Image 1 (tube, rainbow, N blue to C red):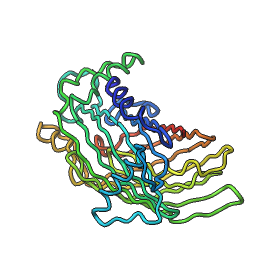
Image 2 (cartoon, one colour):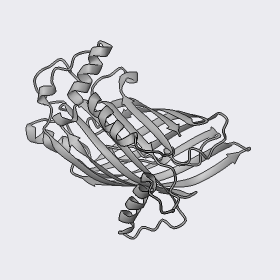
Image 3 (cartoon, rainbow, N blue to C red):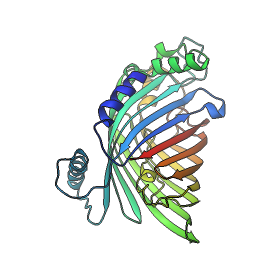
Image 4 (cartoon, one colour):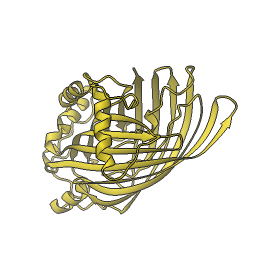
Length: 330
């Protein structure tokens, strides 16, 4: 999986000239655990803004092509800013006991995913939209087994012995729409703000079908003029990665938090596990809590979020993890 990530990232991102590159990593190590949703990685590119000029650059052609597709369903981008994004992401799910070689039918099975996402971002001063298409694979071809064994060997952790029982291959094809609203902004002096955001999303496809709503707040100094939004179980919203240039050039920061509800209609992990005889439960509503901090310094942005007892695709009751997101502007 490491080789696949490097290959796809080089092939996709090296030819691109745009606004920023980012890497996002989830891991449950800060909560002293190594099971269920144990790790996730996303590497992505977000373009410069769409200028509307006809030229031969990949960025402008990419944004215009995605815009033309979305406009077929009646969406208008008049008076709205636009950008494009491409990302590669993967995740790993494992049972609690990594030393057992047999299938553990009263826990979750082993599973990994590897996918690429193509997004169109659109916003104005008050709201944000993201239209995303994801294609990839779940199962042995994701390379998750090799990645976890390599990482555990390097860190001296337990060698996971049950990957021979991972669930079978599934082609992932997903369509997702995210809408975020800046509900309230309160200014304190020249550079400090408090903001409240509401959002919702819908996600349909071969791996997951569901929808969600969320509410987030943040307070900080010299923050960019962007958003905080919910997103589906296989993705993360890019609403807080646009307009990074529109902030004071000095040091900026924020503290933020939110509560989100995911409504699950279909989940391949659960349905395939049930067919194979696994007995873990999947509720229809998955609550998500998060709290974190962000730091902004010139062309660099770093954020750290904690998801205590977050309900995930693997374990709807007790999985916790931390997320770090690093972004560099060109």
